[in-house]
Image (cartoon, rainbow, N blue to C red):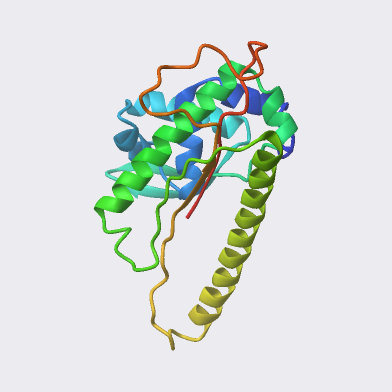
Length: 221
């Protein structure tokens, strides 16, 4: 099946039409899993999850990576394929309903991920870090901060790629260095903030009724 390279591809738009499919995509981007495993984490029935996984598979957004025999049945394991990233202009042109669906599913997934990681001691390392900061910016400085965020994410990907090479080399040396690999989580957000005690916004700062770009989030581990 031809890879999806454009967010306007009808297959991608269809995938975003249901919030559960967005959550499944996010989970399968982290690791391979079967519908049985996904259903237990999503608090959804196996039939519902299996249907949405099959839909994502038919759309070419997930791939079958393994099958295992379990209790006399064949369990299918899937993993997300590389999917298009959203450039600024594409995000700005996305329909408000699709944006809200994506953001809601992503934020729910991030919350669950960070909470579970913290409960398992994920912030025990001395280098672990978490900061929330409010800034007063103008349009120019907001754009500069967004660009700085993208540069930092690119650097984080380079660090991850270098670590992958070292780990592969270590594995080829028959475990001469038995230091364990570290499963690291990274969440980066940039948004127009609102004080916690404010009510929901009546519109947006542009005054045209359109939804402005409210968040940019990336999760890698």
